[in-house]
Amino acid sequence: MIRRLAAPVVGILVFLGVWELVVRLNDVRPFVLRAPSRIVAYLWEHAADYAAAAWVTAQHAFFGSVIALLVALVVGSMMAASRFAEHATQPVLTLLQVTPFVAYIGSVVLWLGSGTRPALFIVALVCMPAFTFATVDGMRSADPATRELLASVDASRWEVLWRLRLPSALPSLFTAARYNVGLALIAAYLVEGGNFANEGLGAIGKRAAALNEGDALWAAVFAMALLGTFSLIALSLVQRVVLRWHVSQRPPRPNWD
Image: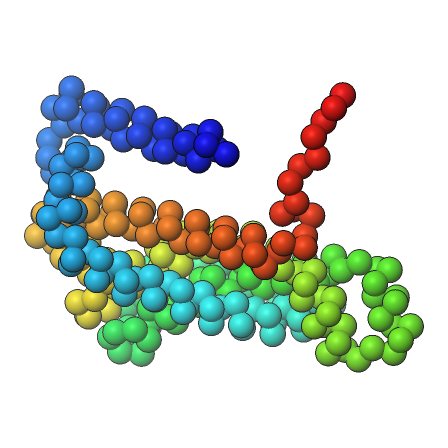
C-alpha cells in the first residue's frame, strides 16, 4: 500500500525536478517557460485568488458534466433499445465529438450571454457524446441470462432498465467520466477566458496571457493540473463505493503457482 501511494508522488517529483533543471541549466527565458519553484511560490502568494477561481471552474466542469450525463442516459437508453435510433443519432454525436468547440465559443457566448450559462452549455455539449456511447455499450452488455430471467417474470421495461441495464452501464460510464474530467475542465477554462466574465481560472489565464504575465499564467496551469488531479482522485473514490459489487473492484487473487 505504501509503495502504491508513494509511486505517483515520486513520479511527479522527478518530473518537476527535471523541469526545474532544464529551465535553470539552459537559462530558458522567463516568458518562454517558468521554473516550477517560481510557479509554486507565486501560486502560494496568491493562493486565495486561485482557490476561489478554481472553485468556480470546478463548478462549471462538474455541473456541466452532470447535465451531459443526464442527457446521455436518456439518449443512450433510446439508442440501446432501437437500432434505428442508434443509426440516426450516432452521426450527430460523432459530429459533436470531432468538431473543435473552440471555434464556436464566441457564438455561444453571444447567444447565452456571459457568465455561467455558456460554460455549462459547452461543457455539457462536449462531454455528452462519450457518456452516450458508454451508455449504449454498457446497456448492450447486460447479461443475457439475467435478461431472460426478468422476461420470465414479466418485468416491465422500467424494471429492466433500472435493475439490469443501468447497473450494467455503470463501469462504462465511469470509464467515460475519467476521459471527460480533463475535457470538462479544458472546456470550462476556455469558455471562462472568452465569456466576458471575470470568473474562474480561464479568466485569470486569459488576462495573464494578454498582459504577458508568465507567473500568473503558469500558476493558472498548475492550478488546473491540481484541480484535475483531485477530481480524478474523487472520481476513483466514488467509483470504488458505487461499484463495490463489480469484479473490477475486487482485489486480485494471489497467484500461488
